[in-house]
Amino acid sequence: MGISTSLATYWYFHLPNFVLAAVMYTMLGRVLLGLMVDADSPNYIWRFFCRITDPVVAAVAIVTPKVTPPVVIWLLSFVWLFWLRVALHYTLLLFNLAPRFGGAAS
Image 1 (tube, rainbow, N blue to C red):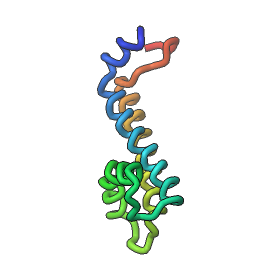
Image 2 (image 1 turned 180 degrees about the vertical axis):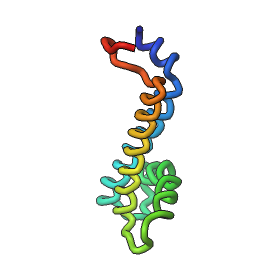
Image 3 (image 1 turned 60 degrees about the vertical axis):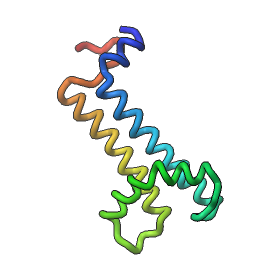
């Protein structure tokens, strides 16, 4: 099975996984960039990272104690996104819907 066939066949796996990975690594970028710039910086890269990751940060902040510093909430958001990707993959494997490696039996 070729790459294009795999992408078309398993779009329900690849699309959510790609979006979750992009947001997850953008969150990590926000953490690292947050060490170098102010929270109200006019830097367009910082504003982009904040705009993309703010919905995830808001969701994680709901279940996190209010005294937690923002950088810790950002790191927890990264961890939650990682485990969400693992849960997606595991669920699709459980229902035999996830793509397999080339030599694996189906």
